[in-house]
Amino acid sequence: MGQLEHRAAPRPGPCGRRPPRQHLPRAGRGAVSAPDVEWGDVEQAAAAWLRARLGSGVRVVNELPASLEKTLPLVQVQLVPGGGDDGINDEVVLDVDHFAATRTAMWALAEQTRTALLALRGRSSAGLVIDDVRTTSRPAHVDYGNAALRRAVATYALTSRAQAPA
Image 1: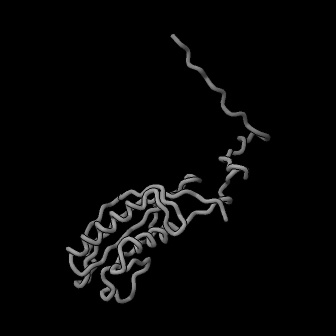
Image 2: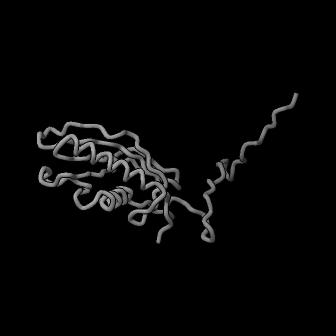
Image 3: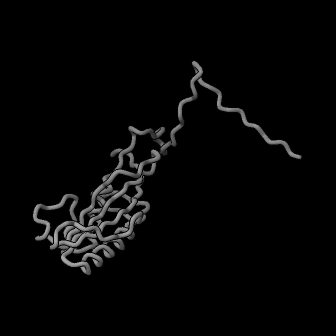
């Protein structure tokens, strides 16, 4: 029978410490470390993309206006806790709220938004390249407590890459 090959563990550096962590090199500029990269604003990039795709009849915001009933239909894009990064790729979780006067209009807006966001995969918006878009929670009705409004909420995970500072 063959024998298992054993590999030696990395040798500790001076004073018994492990050797420093190696970073991926950038062409011609040395190693990349956390302070050398910038993360783009995925919330703003997604909102800008939706503004361009949903048309002038739909208002896309990051914060709700005071008189919500007067600004329908409306889509709110918000960064929420979750996601993370591996030093190169950044995954951001967005909640998207869809407000309309009727359930039919709410569902149509939610599906139109979903289609538009999924089309962002592999494209650029607001100077940021979005590598991947996933629906993590499909649009679902969530009561807003206002008889004049219907709301559907969906959650999406968007992945982008770190960028070198300008």
